[in-house]
Length: 196
View 1 (cartoon, one colour):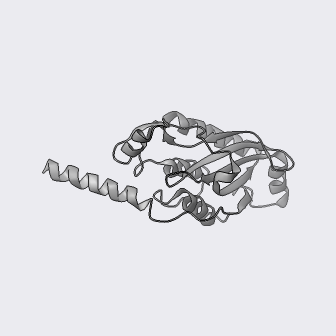
View 2 (cartoon, one colour):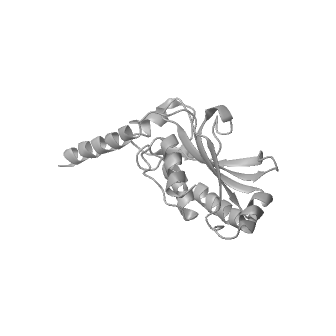
View 3 (cartoon, one colour):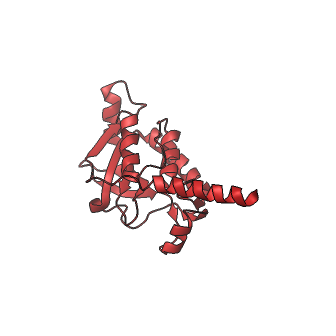
């Protein structure tokens, strides 16, 4: 009986991992910029958030596999260019492909920071930037830092980069799509589900 249960679990996990590979990435999506959902009233508050220049950007990028989702946060200048941005995302803690492949079956050690290509525009496949007031930004950053401290493992089906980003989005009060979507589709649906 245990053997059947193990085989069934392996098949379920393999099926879940395969669902992430069912769609194809499209060409890069346009950039979208919104104000925080908490700034839904006076235009003055939305304008204030833009002037203060604090932001979080939910983003996906192309990769050799099915892509990667993550967030970039920090400040922007008057032209909208990022100033010393920080990155938070979940990925296997290695450049070796073996743990990445193994992570489709068993949890593998993860890292939660920048990975190659995250800040390069040519790899961006979808993005949604939300302008925040300083108070909102400070709360979001505190939540991200707590999440980074507890996220230690990556698994393609159970706790992947989309699941990590979804936790950040939910902490901000957003609805989140299925974590088994390809990252480009995940970020696009996240924006659409929340009126961005």
